[in-house]
Amino acid sequence: MRHDGILFERIKCSQFKETLELPVLFSFKARKISEKEMVAYSFLPPGMEKLLEGREFLILEPFNGGRFSIVKAFAQELKDGECRIVIEEEAARDRRLFERFSFCPEEVGEFTLQRKDRVIRQVYIVDMSLKGVRLLLKGQKRGAVERGELLTLIQGKRILTIRILWDDETRDGLLLGCEIVKANFNVMKFIMDHYVRHVKELMFQNA
Image 1 (cartoon, rainbow, N blue to C red):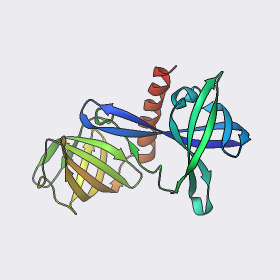
Image 2: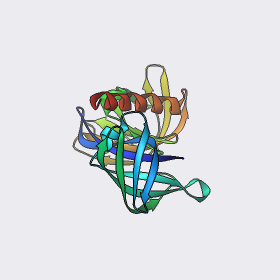
Image 3: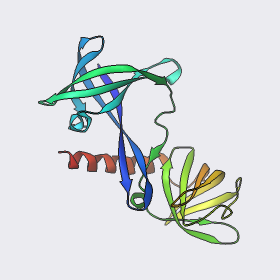
Image 4: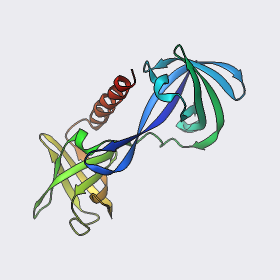
């Protein structure tokens, strides 16, 4: 039986002063030692144990209605592709934990935001889910756009129609929380392509 886990990797972006947390999903097999300990092996992606050593992460157990029972754990004593895992405590039950993925703005690239009266440049995706997106409007302040507005987010041939739900000023500019109303591309593939590329880079750095 395989277990699913998640490690939150803190990343610093060159165009974003805040530190982001990227959820790294993985799985492993385990031999139970006691109620609170197991030996984990056969990690996917391969080499994941090197990222886990000496760090806290989460183990996911399926729960009713598509939810997860989320358990905190700690990895130690890495040897020959195996590590000892100590179960710390049950953290929470939340089926929404992995719906949203964070990205460094420079990795996804610059977008433009089109309004009726003007075009706003230097717009970046900070995180994204199938239904929503959080944007950074670099150098902008409150009043640049209005809550409830329907706007068009454009990058090359990619077009998103979004509705602004909230805004917040930061050191980098204006953050917008938006609902995705319509897209002319596969949002899931867009998210996963960037996610997989970043995880591959992490694996390479820790090889």
